Image (tube, rainbow, N blue to C red; front, top):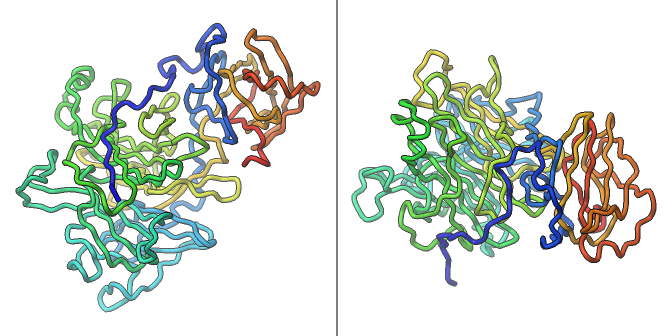
Length: 516
């Protein structure tokens, strides 16, 4: 089988108007020449402007996660973990059990839970500490072929259950950063002289016993905070990994002495392959960048990492931001969105999706998202993350804590990443022409103390159907039309218009029950 490594050109451009403020009209006239968009059975979210023809009087706001009241849910309790237990790692839910692989001071540790809140650290027979069993599944201090299948293991990225590998002994895959030091040769990393760096992959039949290790499966990445994704629609594994790129023009715009000295240009590169083990040879540093800081960021800002997952026909990114300032150095998580998994934009005003904690909290300075998609628990999407109470270097000021890291999570209701909202003065959104399969629509909205009205419009802007006022909160609020519209109106493509007053709109969809 031929394995493919793609250095991506620009595949296609997506019409977007990201520079326009979110509370002003995006366009003033309907264009009958716009191609119609078939929306299918997915929920239609508003993280970008792809569906929007015009928008007036509305504000697009990121909805930060609601952090669990029991946070942190997993803390370092054992001497081989201290001072941190963080998800540089993954959480998987299978057969009713939550399983977590996380990073402690001795290597990769494992725990499990029935509810994802209260965790048990099993006593395994793999690695002992002072003669006692531990929950260590990869011992970073062990020689290769003992409790560590890697020769050059440095730190954990995550664990994934492979949906396509036919070999049951390779059902689970683990990704790690491998570093070969004092290296001289053709594979030297261009950003770390004297070192060879890359993505290492291990395989396991059960996620506990890791027997096969491949130290440099690919050198498309060079450092920590690398994330992998199974892109089911395209049947590819995709890596979003660390690269570096110092933009001299950006440094001139920032005009900041601290940034000139400490800005390393951390950015995210992308590569893909049919599987996680047999990657074709790639020269270090050549994978194309897909996310980097820009002039809208504060001086010294870097993109530390990016976890991407498919969601309702789009790709959502959890972007780990590194704000590197002499007086305030911290990392939080923003949202990004893409229609193809290659071209990304950051969402709304770039406010944090997973913010750092306040004074006295465990996650004061450094949030790192787990290396997995959100986990569905009822109607909620649960996002696990590692939080730390100490700052990232090069900060050396007095406002720093002793090293402590743990695991927590925050949640949102399904689809509620971003809200389009208006106060009592009201706002209006009109979509581009859409091809619908049905006029049976539902809204994900909060309008209990306001209202949302929905109209179907033709190319001339004439109203073909109007809904009763929607004055409720829910994830699947059915739209009731004032008069039963002729179903034939959808055959040529129509615009959907939302009039919003003292309410929030998160998404809409058609055929919510029989197409889901």
